[in-house]
Length: 123
Image (cartoon, rainbow, N blue to C red):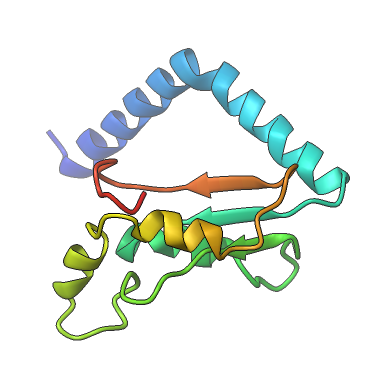
């Protein structure tokens, strides 16, 4: 079988599963984002290392939404050497709490947390 076709077939199967199982959750999330934006609140995004690229991709884009803010922590975005140290940083107990306590998140704001593994302490 053609590898590209196999890859695309798998993507279509994943999207079909997402559509059939996650539509309600995605509609709820979209409503939360819209309500926060319409009412003048902020959207925050957080992730570590490559997961943090999602937060940075949303932030400060030409023509993008100005109410999107990344939550960034020292040592979590591959800016340190060795890069493997970021794995230690994202497992520090209490580091996530420290980051959120120092972010200007207020009632009515929305925080998007992206994690590939879902198991690092900071998230």
